[in-house]
Each structure stands twice: as C-alpha cells, then as structure tokens.
Image (tube, rainbow, N blue to C red; front, side, top):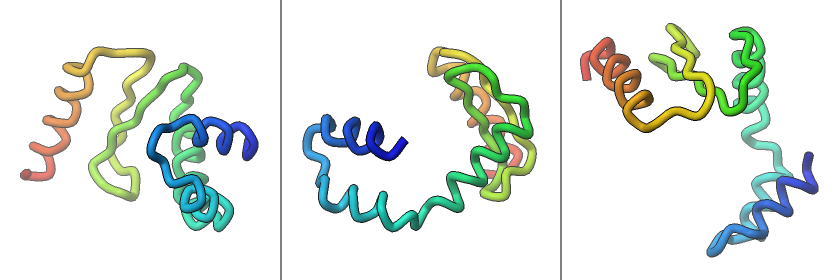
Length: 87
C-alpha cells in the first residue's frame, strides 16, 4: 500500500524522498504497473518472488522464473531472449 511503499522508500540511503513522493503521488507509471500485474496474473504467478522475462515491452513470448534463483538462471534466459532479438 501507499504508506508501506513510502516507509520503505524512506529507508533507502541517498534516495531523494521529495522526488520519490512526487513521482509516486503523480501515478505517472501506474498504467505500466497495472499492465505488469495483469500479465503476472494471466501467467498464473503465485510464487514470490516470480519473474517474467519477455522479448519486448508488449510482453510477447514470456519466460517465467519462479522462486529465488541464482544469477545464472536469469543470465541464460536473458541471453536466449537477446539472441532471439538478434542482439
């Protein structure tokens, strides 16, 4: 919730709280967050943490990583996605 987010942010060293609160309150990125939540729900995310790595901003070709994983698990998926994109 809003109070918890702002409380957590206040504990981050060096964070400009005025800028954070202004951005948070403006809800500029709410649409992006709502899209991410909708995508996560559509993929059946029930584990925490869960990650989804996609080929593009539209969420195409999702690959899910469930649970706490070491970096190599992420790296292999990221490398695969970059290869598919020709990068």
